[in-house]
Image 1 (tube, rainbow, N blue to C red):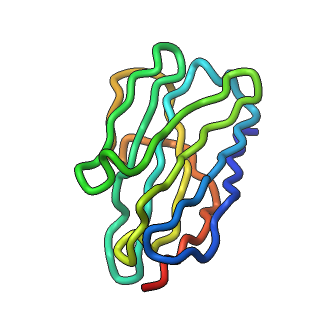
Image 2 (spheres, rainbow, N blue to C red; image 1 turned 90 degrees about the vertical axis):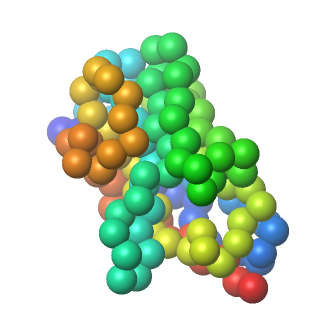
Length: 124
């Protein structure tokens, strides 16, 4: 059974940092691409970053480029999103997602498997 379990969300002040983790199980890690998405109340789900573990290629949304970093630990089957220079507009539920490896896309409909999400709240 494919499982993605996020952790690391919380409350942080403007300018602060957080580290989100996604533990993947039930499939061969290197055979999948991974993405982080977020959804704020009343808004559509938005792509944040994605990564292909095999070659480390990444895509970032313009809104987080230079502030967030996505990475993988292939030995631990985890995907990490380091959030920096946070502002209130980053407040959302953050989701980890996976899709069988192919063309790397930062597009929610592309992904087949989703975690339950973790809340990130940035106070002003």
